[in-house]
Amino acid sequence: MATATMALMLIGGCRSSEHTAHAASPAAREASGEPAVNAKAPDAGGARDDSLANPIDPSTQPTDTTKPVPAPATNPAAAPSEPSPTAPSAPSSTLREVFPGVRVDLASKLVEFDGIVPIDVHNPKSPRVYLEVIACSFDSKEHESLVVTRAKPSQVHAAMLMIGLEPGAPGSWRVDEQSRVTSVPPRGSPVRVTLVFNPASPDAKEIDPAELVVNARTKARASSLSGAGFVFGGSRIVEWQGRSFYDADGTGTLIGLATFGSETIAWREVFSPEAAIAEPVWIADNERVPAANTPVTVRLRPVSDK
Image 1 (cartoon, rainbow, N blue to C red):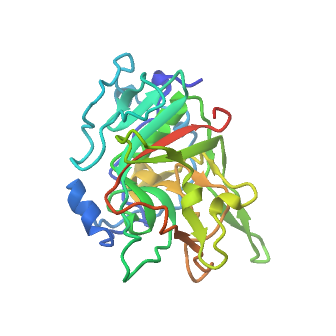
Image 2 (cartoon, rainbow, N blue to C red):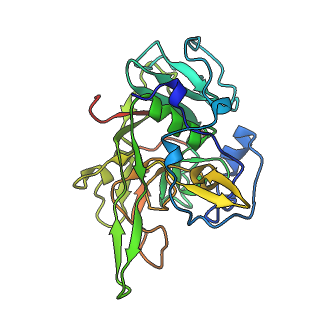
Image 3 (spheres, one colour):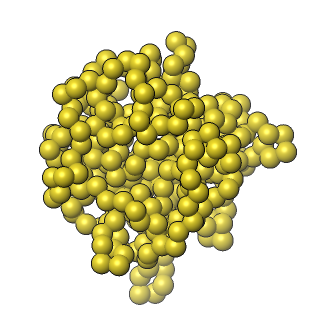
């Protein structure tokens, strides 16, 4: 199993060609104090780099994992409106903060981080919210995500290595000599993703995010699809101006639904986020998604560890 000394080479500062600033979530951005960013980006088509699983920079290793996070604690990366790092409903008292806002329980093989709900599905003027990601970074895809977080995707990647998950590759498309396009499914260790809304509440429960995503036409839940679930795609390394960057840090695609090709955690089904290629069908369940700015904790585990 990967340990703290095998954590990911952290890279940041990149704004890839997929990244543009969105103003669809002003309440969430104001609550977070997150500054707006609208940076031009490099070409996101870089090849995958095996350094994701074999870090080389010891100066970027996670913080000491021998010191437990006190409960309650204050997440140094979180806005005042976000929940405390260790919610009462946490399944373990041995969570340790290994990166700002990213906590790990090695014994239980658990990674978790906090965020808020950025979308407003209860606005009668715009009740239908199409989804393309499950969790994203601020100033990226808040208008189409169930969760927005300050947790850095590359550091979540590193934490997942620590609990023994193996990265593969996000989904993609292949064009043959006859210009026929075929999809390539994502690969990597299966990941169990759960959300805990209002985690400080004694009544808080874990829920599969696929239960909150429904087909706009058929009303079927994403969880009902054959083979539904997530895998540790591991994003990719892109090159820009002679430097290497972890793509999801720039695009904000931490847990994907549509296939952008940069997701840290990928939805198994490959479908394009471009409306001209594939008609959008996945929307948030208005009856089950809570109000905008509701605190949420995201938990990640190997699928075998229920």
